[in-house]
Length: 101
Image (tube, rainbow, N blue to C red):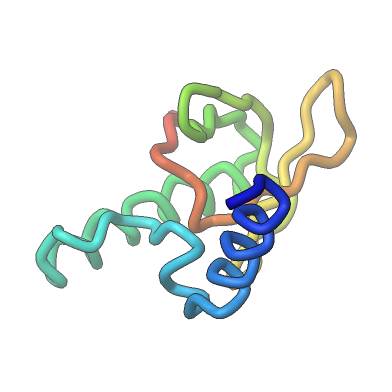
């Protein structure tokens, strides 16, 4: 098979996959439901506290850490600002961890 055909098959499979199969969860699927809820609430608690106080947080995404203060928190995203960027929008389902005071 040629590379173009393989790429087309891969893109078709990705497009047909359910959304939950494409996007990572806030907490991995193997974690029990009760633990998942506690961990997700903990992440949101730190983000909400940063929004209320204006203090900065570190958001961990894979091997990257992004620092900033939370300016807006919606159902699926968190918006930060820092000295370098006035607006940083991150998807909640991509966040691995959060550190804040």
